[in-house]
Image (cartoon, rainbow, N blue to C red; front, side, top):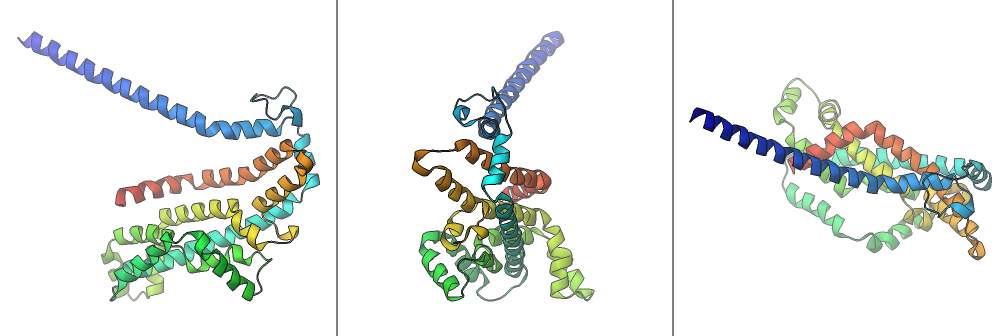
Length: 293
């Protein structure tokens, strides 16, 4: 009986292990497939940038006659350095402004207790339900009245007032922090500003990094606002410049796609580098947010 029970246990363990290996194998296969699907466009883009115009769309990942002539031509034909500088300025200002302002508002909604706090917070969240097209014209009229149309200011200055989505995200982190820590700091003589900057902000670092990365990506790839506000090519950002390049190199149907994809590679690399720099905090912030919500 003991031998039979042992054999039954071993058989059950074998079946369980087999199911476990099959499950893990299936997960690995699905992740591999998803990785290929997401990475293939980037690989194709890099490959196409190394091909002459006649071979751009041949769908071969390894160019038959690779060349860096496209990279030389694009730097000669378009002021990419200026556009990258403008985009970098807008991205840094937009990301820093919205991160700081959203954290400040989120701190107020999480730390302070006052009448109507929840109603006011829901009002802030309600602004997310407004489509951007609804506020586009009034916002333009405001910047036009301030004489800022044609400058880079409208592309980032609106972030000084925070973002409802980021306020909600950061507030969830602040609410999870033990309030006793803040009360102890207050007893020790810390001011509200010191509690916020020296305790709240460091403990909320993952959420702030997520906000910074999200807004940096949004500002770097934004095309709508540059199309509305920018007039002179000297103030163009990268997306606006690429649109101008499409118009220039696509004149009379003579599309120079090899230059377009080359510019795409050049402008995509900074976002890849930025993600790898902040990926640890980014993954931690997203995972923690998911666990708390």
